[in-house]
Length: 323
Image: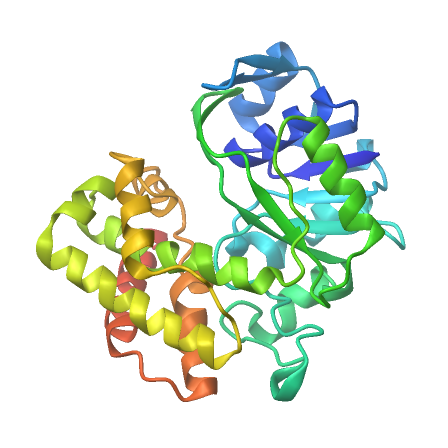
């Protein structure tokens, strides 16, 4: 199995290292000091499950790699539309793209069925720019439950979780999903093939849509947000509104808000990825988290006043950060 990891940051490098350890032909695409360190020392994974180092091929030039069986996309979703020159050399007629993104993916309504089948979500696929680069037919959905951070160039700190749920947009049990799942498991990761990954998307989003923007606005950790009474109440309201949109689209998350909050509280003083991006001066990945759900609320006729308010404020923060 030949796999390219486009955007081999904390999550991408962790997955690439695990697949390489399992014997896959892995190629990591990165840049700067992180790339130099991976070339020199390999990917060093520090984990409570055991440290290890993987010496996979690392480059900043996809032309060196050529077509692969799978592209594991570790880029932020707001970079997808511009990634064409990087991903095109990696594609053949059957290459699958596994996008490890938070929030609502560009392929969400691809083979969805029902009245919304094939509908484009403007906030995540503006003008079809993402679909033009990443054809929905190539997409395998992926919901990441692992938490990792780059401790330094070439050094990935694995904090918790090893689950990467995957699934086809058309809900089929495909051979390409099964093969990738088996490779991930051989590398020590959990990779269940879900019949309808959209339920997992909403389950993960339930936390991301609330904790991520609030953390950026407050500079607070998971534990701090859960322990502050007023903030916790706002988060609960955001979660209720998100559940209402998910249910309007036929998804059953199967978890209570109380249980989701308890899980977040157990994470402790962890900074969300959005807060990490803010502190690093990087663009904030909020369109796929908040703007997309507000757009889906408009499509389904669900009232989401708190989501709209938090989106308006956090969108201003995102624009000021990008300026």
